[in-house]
Image (cartoon, rainbow, N blue to C red; front, side):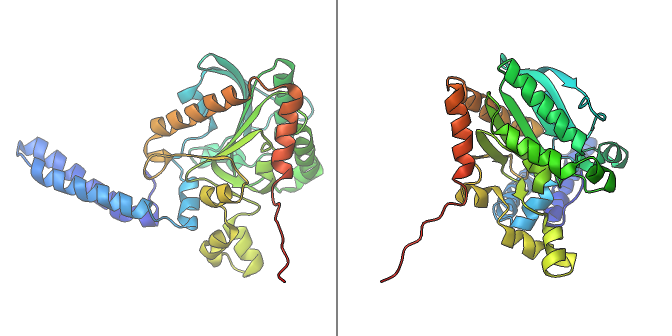
Length: 320
């Protein structure tokens, strides 16, 4: 498992416990009291560290290489997932996957960013940074879901849309803008969950939904902390300060009314217990599908429109 700097005391204690257990087993010596003491200390240490994470540390967890991806969740909480490829215009974008699946008897359409597990796969999937054809592929699935009255579940996990020359030549900004516009008119429920990184327009391109939630240790922002740091301070070393200023954590965004719900993660993050994280995510999806299934098409679209229309509304009063 990859080590994050603030997790090192936890990982060192876990290794010490594992060594004691191995020694106890091999030498047939009863060390249960010592092991119990260390495990008690480990639990206290986890509560202390994970209960006081700052914004930058949560960003680091959201990027953990072992964090479950879209395809992991389709395997854990869904059945009969069938991936659909291509935008019928240019090609297939592996950074953004689409498909059809079944979740506890509910037929759904799935759209999500997909990162890799290692350097080779990340290069193949472009580190989850989608091209225009990825967003056109997503819209093709939204239209298909609308045709067959299937709820859509979107998983956001990207540092941002791919900013390369080829993507710009093929209309990156235009395809994202079209998706944002057209998602407001899709005549079926759209449920959006930020499962890792939620960066800029790359996230918004599949981020318009009737309900938007975030996993506890994910982030959602107009720009990455490093990008913000480079622009405001002319250096990337201020990323931690930028993360704090951006208010990009799930707690901040719930307070600001940008998201509707925070989905609890296991202590330490989804990468530490993917099954438990998947169970919590599944519960949220099923509840959300039930919440919107009886709404008329008109109310469904109006609900989505008003949700985003009300973002950023403030009240002013004059002092006399």
